[in-house]
View 1 (cartoon, rainbow, N blue to C red):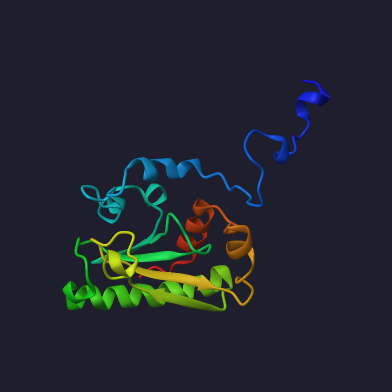
View 2: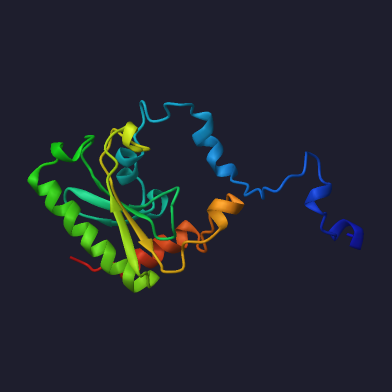
Amino acid sequence: MTDDDRRVEDAAQLAGVPDEFQRLWTPHRMAYIQAGSEPLKHDCPFCAAPDKSDEEGLIVARGETAYVLLNLFPYNSGHLLVCPYRHFATYDDATPEEVAEIGALTQIAMRVLRTVANCDGFNLGMNQGAVAGAGVAEHLHQHVVPRWATDANFFPIIAKTKALPQLLGEVRQAVQEAWPTL
């Protein structure tokens, strides 16, 4: 291999029309894109995850009626989801046992993320229905998003880029290792 073979090409000189946008290539999302507008019509990722290994399903903890996993498309590093095993869409359909365990797992997730990620706060939420922004509207899930005083920056607004400093597998392992045994 010669020095010419190893040189880095200026992106502005590559094929295409140069513009002010940086590209963050995410080929792993093609499966999601190719699935079409209703990728979850027959397959629910929250029903499938518990049947996988913890590593493959990104699961960090399993309870009796609910479990905790990493969001595959996180807003921030450490973005967790608390999901009931049972497939239902809205919080008012949850049993008292599911409500209690979703709440308890959310509290533990917050404590673990404070330890593992040294976060300053959280966004918690459940988007009920597609009109409310739920990506998986048919299966209830609670978002636990860690936040830092310094996480609001120009990247998403100006650069159309979200910076995630850790890989999902690394985050999953750190959170699972810090999760208390019940």
